[in-house]
Length: 566
Image (cartoon, rainbow, N blue to C red; front, side, top):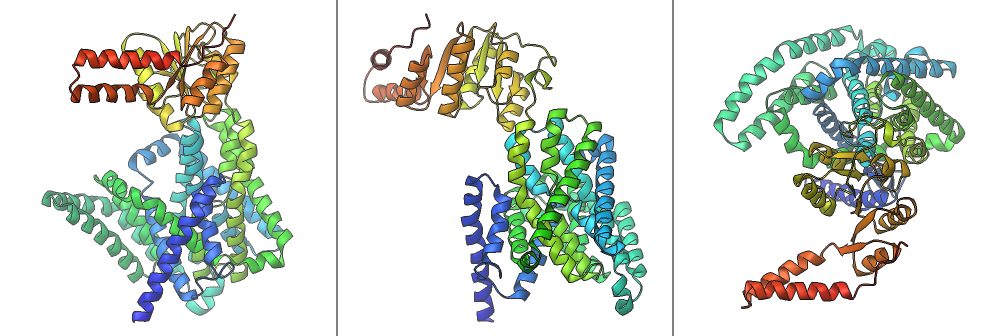
């Protein structure tokens, strides 16, 4: 007993250590956390360093991680998202899922697989990775943009589609019919359970949650949510249904309640780690013997999968609000298969719906398709830049040039303050920023804004640089700030340029490059602190202010003179 506990603790330590080492490295290489976790699992698994060799432990860890993953996936189906999906996006989502499944099924039959094996492969491979796509969206596009909305709607449709897949999958287990009998009793039981869940689950839960909340203790609320989830898992197990279905329905039941948002917020700090544990478990189970035997066939299948999915998604997006230039990028993001594909494959094995060799090949294809995403996105990103005059949600009509007095490049801690001060005093400021979160924030604050790299000529033109009087450069990247300054001096010499500097050397460089004024981002704060310190040690407020002004003047005089524009 003690030895088993020690082994369990050691294995958990290995999982966490592998993730801690692999994820930062993958992120520095631009691969993202998902690929770090997947590579960590490969590294510690049987085909890597073999730090964890116990097959039973790997299977148990994978099963627990799968249940948690499905629970978290269901928590993404918030009522607001489902409403937006039903209002217009579900048709495209269903069309994408069905067409992709059928086309992959056709390819599977052409290469010699029976139709039911090929159908299982199509259902699994048609599901894209929520984790990969969400990371890509957060890195590049603002929340609420047409691209991110369309992407999330397609992903949500795929996640909802696996509920009937879980219930109906036993019908494809023809080999299991000989040993386990007809699958219809299990399927009918699953359909009845889904019907009862849909009709009575939400109503019963509402009254129960209201009673629990009336107690006024957070721990009771958390205990009830946990009790409900485990209870559903026990019910589906008693009905001989898959635990995966219980986890998914438990998450859907909780997120649909009045307190779903509170549960989702409470789970947020753990969601990334739990998803990471699933990918580590998946990485350990990848069978590279299949790749060693058939490397060319494996690469061909991965390339075919990515091409088929990207082609279908791109054509479907023609009927969406996603701008034409961005469709290739979004199609590339959704071209891989994802975490839910692993779940469908594992469930298909348990129902004997596909043979073990085909399952091993499918798992390898899914994993490799995910690993190709960063490379493909690098090339797709060159074609998805949306011209400034075609951007929507900027605060000006598409195709129009902003009527600005001041352009603020960067909405960080410096640019935000400058823009707000101008806004509150009635001046017309336009903001340019390439961070999705900051762009959303500046639009919510009522600023006219353009999304993208401030050094792009079309963004500067659309922001009104030809008529503006002042440009404030408040970018985080010193190199980008210098490039922007040089471009502005060439193309808009009439602009007065005020630049934020990261340090003294950066301040001097900006002045040499042509900035009218450059400000160290910590200098004024340090002056205010120094002035307060002088007052605290006995200097009068007026004298302290005068001493601070004298120090500021002396510091400014020591700066090199700005380059003349004549």
